[in-house]
Image: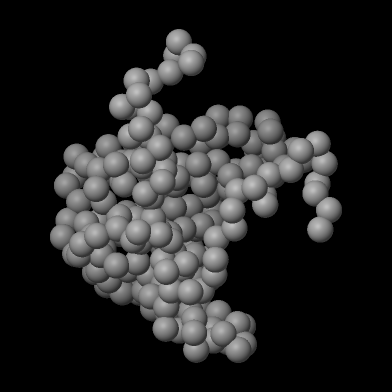
Length: 215
């Protein structure tokens, strides 16, 4: 055991937050206290980022009309996705894919503009800015779970349309609509698994040694 390790109780809490984090779609309304929201966003802001570029930007949505407009954008993409899924279209349309109208807080997580100026760590892997934003979102997600709040990541939207709706500058890109707030309960397993949409693969199928495992 490393001398820098947390206590057993602290380690258990970290692993519990990881294990019980869920992509939530069902919310109980209510609000997120300002000091709690600030704490969660600060957790997101402590994420690692390539070249310390901190590419994340968070837009808090407080106008009801704007929330409705975002929900409409998601509804339009939901229909397009259903069409693209072909024979699984009807099955997909039965799924609840967002909680935009019900969550206590709505955030849009985006990549900043001017990212091409940041070369450190991105010369051959420019998508590391997206990886950095994903780390910030995961920090927010785990902190929310520890605080007893649910969070859902919605990616069903046209990025250009959402960027225009939010007045984002050229080069900025919305990546996630984040539904955050109180829930009645957390799903005991990923919702898509519970709904029979897919079956999660076990870790041993995804870990290779020294070379990519042949199929």
